[in-house]
Length: 530
Ligand code: KIV
Ligand code: ZN
Image (cartoon, rainbow, N blue to C red):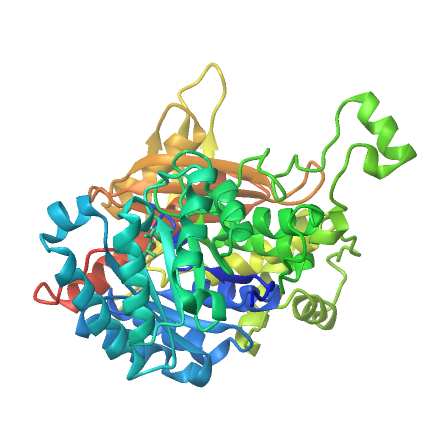
């Protein structure tokens, strides 16, 4: 008997984080995980524990802290991976899950793994059995499932279920499928495997967006019998990304006439908040016209549309923006608001901060309050997130002065402080740089001062709240020569200062990760991402 409740499996912190330049630190991951808890995702894939000490720690902390959702960690069919995942999800107790995967398609078997079907089958079974030693709830993914011979895929499903898997995920790993075909495959599996019909095990779907069909494929698969859908906030993920959680949740809700009886536990009122948090924490800017959560999703510019909306909202709007938490009005704070008002607002926004952190935020709030008439929730969120995304500051920003104009060579003077090594004295350094514009000049000066030259690969600036005095938030990505993109964020009412702070944030992040990598040692096992 089919149960029509669809389980939402969020993989923002695992597949989403595999997006180049989207990696998050522990504190950022924890904030996202807490928000995913408020969004009420059923399963939260918190990371890939064997990949690094940082990944392990993040999964373990999330398993300890986030209640309500099942917490899972990813593992290849290797003992060391499964053991790491088992240990990391332990604090979640009965809500712990291990997600084991192994490629099954012919192209992966022949070229990547060099293994025959029977070897794949026995490794999959062994992997599931080992995971069962840690948790009851085991998911198995035949990677590149959508390109696997259906007859072999049926065999794999039956074998891993017999070994104890309770969820079998059929990934469209390379975004190859189209909806009719993918739904056909899911239906075929459902009909061929008695445990899917009895409810002893469920089918999950996991779609990538290489052809722009991830959401369409996921929805088609749910109608064909899948009961878990794997997705990410804002659709971030490997290459073109994963299916976007918010789009699937709203499609099920808005078109309940088509997706008859299929329900979810997603608290849609938390969608906008979650989308913005993930965007800021991952440094992945949401395109303006993105469905559901883009800035323009509810903006009507034509007069005909505006007239229609005023007469009856449903003439041009199929979703009530309030249903997803859009535009909930708030009373702005001012520089006269006291600590208690700021603390109450922070609590309302869902932040869990220590007394020391509150003091830092209140001090920053006062600085901003002196420059801006009103401090909005979005401003406050930016301040807190700026603090959260802050990394230990090898270099801290002190001062920038620019000379610029259309008749002069843009020049920037920058002063930075360098943290003392051991118990020595902090050093203050100053230099000037020139560039194509004031931002370029300031970043060139930072390159010279820190002796960590980087290539700016991506830069975006957005106004955080309303008015000409709005905070400008800069998100950028830098390549410091390793080929890896390092994200940086900074906010200020002065956009040159915001740019310099964002760049310095990236420099500090790069120095910190280089230090951590050196500490882990060259002889540590190398783990490729799935
Ligand atoms: O896309 C994929 O195949 C994956 C698996 C690890 C589930 O992300
Ligand atoms: Zn994936």
